Amino acid sequence: MPKLRLDSWKSIAEYLERSSRTVQRWHASHGLPVHHFGGCKGSVFAYAQEIDRWLLSLAEGTRIADPEEDEEHEARKRRSLELTARALEMWETRSEENLNTIAGLYRKAIDQYPGNARAFVGLADTMISAALEGVMDGSVAYPCATEALRRAAQLDSERMDARCGTAWLSMVYERKWRQARAGFEEVLSKQPHGSFALSGMALLHIAEGDLTSAFHCAWEAWMQNTLVCSLGALVCWIKYLQGEFEQALELVAQVRGSGGYGATIGAIEALALTQAGATAASLKRIEAIAFDFPQSQTLQGALGYAYATSKQTGSALEILQNLEQSNAGKKPNNAYARALVLLGLGDARETAPWLEAAYAEGSLWSLGFHSDPVLRRLRSEPGYDALLRKIGTSAGRGIQPAHSLAFIARATPGSSGRRNDRDLARA
Image (cartoon, rainbow, N blue to C red; front, side, top):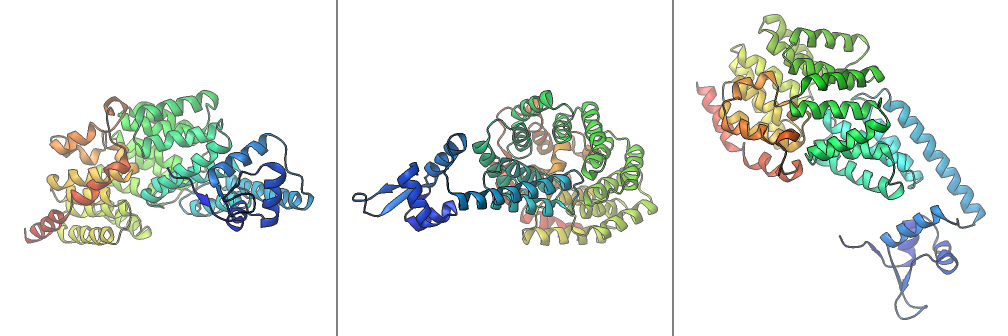
C-alpha cells in the first residue's frame, strides 16, 4: 500500500490540524519526521504514516509543551469524550431509527480528537449494526467498519471491544468462521455478559445450524439489555428458524409491548405469519406491516411471497417488478426479498441464485439459510445445496469472503429473471 505523501509545510500542517509555524517548531525541536530536498532550505515532504508513528510515540513519552495549544487540545479531547459518552448512552437503547445519530456522534468525537480509540470502535459497531438491519448498504458499511477498527488498533491494540468488532466482521463480511468464533470466545472469556459479543455468537450458531445454542446466547444477550429491539428480534428470529411460529409471534408481541419497533422485527413477524398458515387475516396483517415500513426490502419480499402463495399472482409480480427497479437504482439488500417472491411463485430455479447474491451482500438473513423454514422446498436444488456448504464453520474451508463474491449479484440472476417474470405473467 503506497504511503500518503505530504508535499509542503502547509499540507503537513493541515494533516496535523496545526499552524505551519507550529509544525516547523515541532520539526526543529521535537523530531517531527519531515524530509528535505536539496538541504535544509529546500522544499519539504513528509509521510503520513511516519507522522502517525511519531504521534503515537509522543502519547507514550514526553508531550510537546505549548500552553495555548495544550489548552485547546484538552478542550477538544474533553468534547470528544463527552460526545462518545452520549453515543454510548444511545447505543444502550439503539434502534433502527437512532443508528445514524449514534454514528454521527462518534464521527464528531473523532473529528474533535483523532486519538479517541473508543470512538473508532463505536463507529465500527454502529456500521455493522446498520448494515445488518438494512439501514446502510453493507458494501459501504463493512469497509467503513474495517477502517475504523484498523485506526482503533493503531491507537490501542489491546482493546477487547475492538476485538469483538473484528469478530463480527470476520463473520458477516469476510465469512471467516473460525476466526469469528475465536474472537467471540476470547471476548466472552473476559466479558461473559457482553451483549454485543453474545448476539454475535448467537448468529454464528445460527450459521452452523445449532439453533439451541443460538437461542441460549441470544436470550442472554437480550436479558442483558432488554431495551434493544434488535436483540429481542434475534430471539424471535431463532424461534421462527426452529419452526416454532406461534412462539415466534408471541415473542414478537412481547418485543412490541416493550416499545420495540422496526422493520427487522416486522419482517420476522411477516415471515412467521407466512409459515403459520395462509389466512386472510395473516395476509392483511402482513400488508399492514409492509405499509408501515415501505423501505424494508425483506418485508416487501415477504408480502410478495404471501401474495404468491395466496394465488394473487398479479400482486406478487408487481412487487417483484418494484424490487427489480429498486435493484437497478442500486438500492441495497433486496436479493433475499426477490428470492422470497420467486419462491412463492414456484420458481425454484431462479430462487437459488438470488440467495447466493444475498450471501454476497453480507445479508443478515443469509446466516439462517441452513434452517429457514420458507426455503425448505429448495433442499433438493443443487445450487442451494452448494450455497449451504459455504455457510457455517463446519463447511467453511476455502470459502471466499463475501466481498469477493459480489460478482454473483451482478452476473447470476440477471435478465433471465426478467424473462421469467413475463413467462409467469403469461401463465
